[in-house]
Image (tube, rainbow, N blue to C red; front, side, top):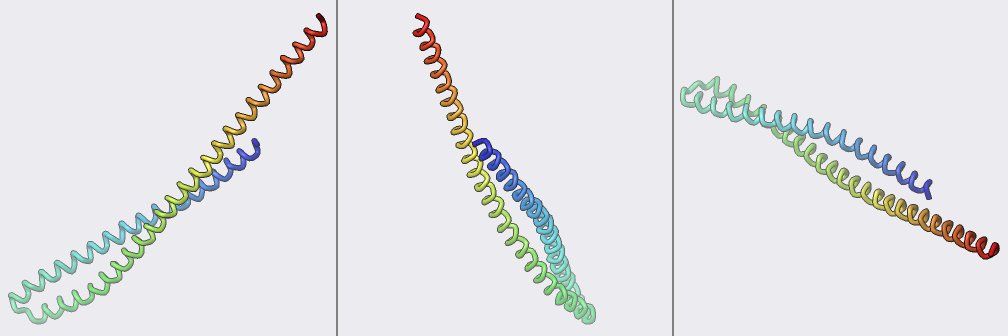
Length: 149
């Protein structure tokens, strides 16, 4: 019985290590997610500023500058799309890792519950054994008293 409890302790420790590995990866993803979000935000700001600058150029009638600004905006669009895709991929992966963490927590709680029941059973058996031993001692003492009398 004690070996069984030790086995559960080892299983729980292994599950905890697995959970920690998932958490470490999750935290790395979170950092990448934040970085991707910041980069996306910067690119979108650049695009917005470029469009505002283009409006001013149109008002002033600078044709060559308008062409350069248009090209600059056209070059930003694929970068923004690529960054949006990266951002979404990381977001999806974060969700998957969150589910894994939840599942590991549930799994660990199940093991801990079973371990708790095994410990209860172990303690109950010890009490039963002690009670039986006490009964035997009482019977032996009674019998010794009967023999002497």
